[in-house]
Image (cartoon, rainbow, N blue to C red; front, side, top):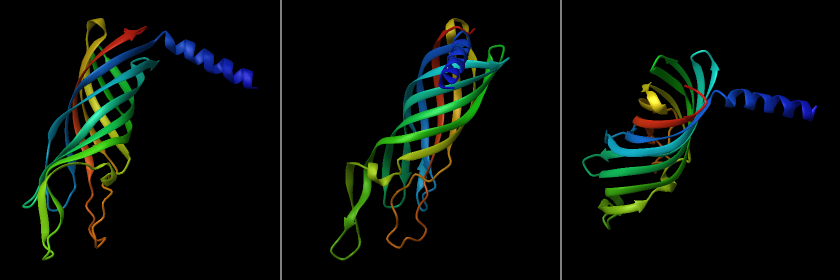
Length: 209
């Protein structure tokens, strides 16, 4: 039975490899962290790099898993704070892709694992002797302030050109709350969700056109 399963898997791999394309990609992230009560969120530019594997399923439909190093985050500002958050993720999008001529559309889920976080700017650093908040300029690691996992939905479109070169854009909407810091009261804990616009270029090599 085991030999039969191995034979089937090998046949599937050999069957898809003739219509598969490996590639590399990278580009711009324009990201924000939405949801914190009492603070204004604004977008910040970051970047991403990664690799992809596209294999055809049927007609214009293909599946494209990727691995990426993606820097996200954003700027949060209130009357007492003004700071940038930088979140470094390892992300794995798995996209269904439909191509008609040079134009393609893509969509699917993405799993992200937080590697490191940093906060830079003016933050509350403690309490003064009279019990009022004390603020200061800080540049500090903040990995413990964020949940390690992030689940998102991805949608985008692009153009595939000659030589395996393609360009595209995506919107990535985080579905879960990535904040991992509770208020002292435990009431109205702020929710934070990743929102990312991506612009990218990719170069693919392989058996497909």
